[in-house]
Amino acid sequence: MSQIITIFIVRHGHAKFSGPTDFERPLKDKGIKFVKKTAQFIQAQCLAQQLTPKLCISSAATRTLETAQIIAKDMEGLAIEAHQELYATSASAWLTKIENSSCDSLILVGHNPTFSQMVNYFCGHNIQMKPSECALIELEIKADGIIYPATLIDYHHNE
Image (cartoon, rainbow, N blue to C red; front, top):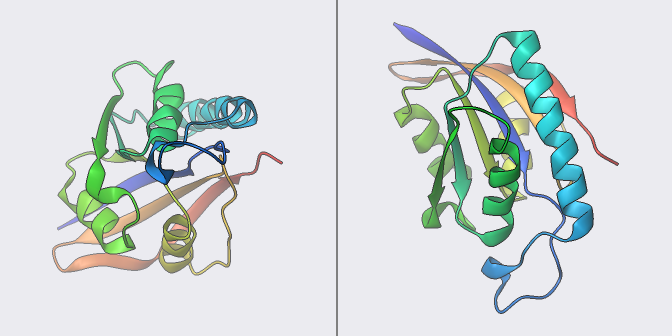
């Protein structure tokens, strides 16, 4: 038996260069502006693809959590799970979250280089995600793992 999952992979928005720590750097005005455009893209794709994401999985870093909150603001019923272990981690930690989810559509908000690597690994493309960019992919998961390649349905650029 297999499961088809549609995933919005979103790199966090532009962040300020300073903060008490890298983990605590907030979005800057440009980041907020572009994330709002990304949120509009996600909402439009949800309508076009008939998707209703119920879960947004995010790194717990300030800039990713702020990005997730902007995206979730106008999406009814979208819960945000923030995970400390998804900050500065590898794709395998994200894959575990995807595989353990019971959702048929998800939004992931995280960091580079991990997200560019994930999109490229899933779909066989050479994409370098910039802040606020979003890849919409569809992948199939069977009992023994993900079926490759996944399908890159659309890609949202902001700049």
